[in-house]
Length: 189
Image (cartoon, rainbow, N blue to C red; front, side, top):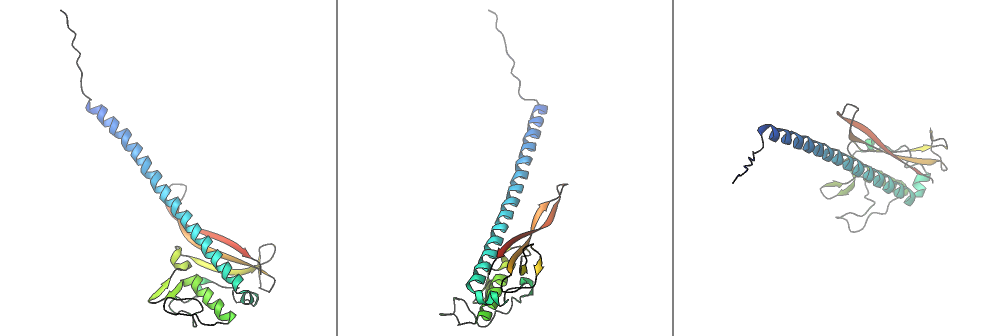
C-alpha cells in the first residue's frame, strides 16, 4: 500500500512580515481618516455655534428695534467689550436676581452687546459668548448698502452681522495650519 504524505508547512517569516506591513498600512489609513473626521466634525460644530451666535444677536436687535434704529448696535465689535465688568443694570434674567431691571433701549443694547461678547453674567463669573464658544471668536456689526459696501448707519440701512473664528485645516502639503472662518448675516431694520 502506497501512501502519500503531504507536508504542510507553516507561514514563513517573510509571509508574516508582509501581512503585518499590509495590515499596518490599512490601520494607518483608518487613523488618518479618523483624525480628518474629527477635524471636520469640529469645524461643523464651530460653524453651528457661529450661526447660533449671529441668530441670537439678530433676534436681540429685532427685539430692541428702537436701539437698532438709533444706531446702538452699529459699529459694534466684541473685541472692544471688557468682559471683566458686567454692565449695570443687568437687563436680563439672572440666577441671583428674581426680576431683571427695567432698562432703557440703550441700556438693553449695552447688555445685549455684553452677552454676545462675554456671555451671561452669573454668580461667580459668566457663561457663553462668542469669545468662549469659538476659538478666537469675534462678533461685529456694521451697516452696508445694496452692493454690500460698508456705509454709515442710518435708520434704513441694512445691518451686517459678522462672526469670525479660527479653524485648524491642512495646507496642500498636508501640514496643519490655522484658517480664518467667517459667517455673515444681514438684518434689515
